[in-house]
Structure formats: structure tokens, C-alpha cells
Image (cartoon, rainbow over all chains, first blue to last red; front, top):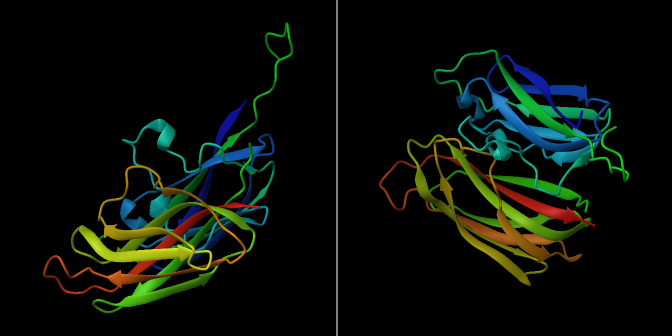
Length: 135
Length: 127
């Protein structure tokens, strides 16, 4: 298997709440090649922020707005995930630390809700030897 | 080729009409190239605003002035992860970012001023 999309769920129970979540990346995959944030009600993106560290390396600072990592269903599939073409983070069984802060928007929205951080995990392609069709 | 990237987010509160914010931020010394910038205004605006404010940024002891731009606001979420304005500017050890931000949110249309948060996003390559 070369690709896996790993979700990390963040449950928010009240407006303005700060939530810290820790998880580990899947040990079978070597790299994080993209990230995306999905929230059950889009209005919760208002002023919400997410800080992310992988193996204590800061990927997004705490002030990073979740709307910069949002993607709606009508976008092209290859635009779903944030990371540049040549960018990845080493991450085999790596510790993921998330600090999510709800923006405090309360007009017509309900609590609790779930924010989900999706990690796009990949393994680097293997190099085939001559006369080898598959492994 | 692996490129180690660093993202920085710097928030400011804009609390009065026509406010001018002097920007002066020390950046980490591990950075070698500025590859992108993005600006975000977040407030309880009642409609889209094309020019919320004007921003100007300088780097490397004011030898580099890559950005003089207008920040906009839209109520709708972007359709896909936001792309930064691309840049390709080497950064030296004089890692202080300077510049200014000027509020223009009530200039084009008559509206009540709404306090908001301006966030400057920077993307760098690390040494």
C-alpha cells in the first residue's frame, strides 16, 4: 500500500474552546504529503485556528487559521490537500500534536462538533530492479 | 529534492478606523528563502470587502521590498486550500521584517467600522 488518508478527530464542545489532541501516524507509512481540515459545519471555520507539530517539529503555528486548510467538495481532487508539490514531513509512527482553538462563533451553530484533520500518508516509490515485474 | 519549509503566522488586532500598524518582527535565523506570503482579515463584516487594508513588507534591513498589497475579505470560504502569493527571495541573517498596515475598511463604502484581526502568513525555506 503506498497511500493512506488518516483522520484525526477533534471534538469541540463549546464556543472558544481550546482542544489539544495527540495521535501517532500510521507506522507503515514514511511521509506526510498533505493535510486538510474538515469541519461538520463550515461556519465553525470563522476565526478558528489550528497549531500542528509532528515529532516536535512545528508544521503550522498556533495562529494558523483553519480556513486556509479548508477545501469544499467541488474542488479538484488534487487540490484537496495543503502542501507544496515537493514538500513532505518524515512521519513513520510519529507523534502528532494538535492545538485547535474554536473561533467563538455562535450565531445559529450547534455544539458539540467535530473537526477532522486528514493526513495524506505515502511511502516513497520503490525502485524496480531490471526484469522485475512486481514485488 | 527535499525542501524543509517553515510557516509563520503573525496576528494583529485592528481596533480603530484608519489605524496604521507599524510592523517590526524578528524572524528565526534558520531561514534562507522567502517563498510565499498570504494575508487574512477576519472579523464580523456583513459583506465582502475588496480593500480591507493596505500592507507593505520589507526584509533584510529594508533591502528587500517584495510586497505592497491590498488585503481583501470574503465571507465565503475558499474552494480549496489557500495558495500563497509566490515569491523567491533569499533572506540573509538580518532577519527583521518591517513595514506597515493601514486600515481602509470603511473607505470605499459607508459602513460602520468593525474591529478585526489581520494575520500575516509567511512561507520560508529553512537552511
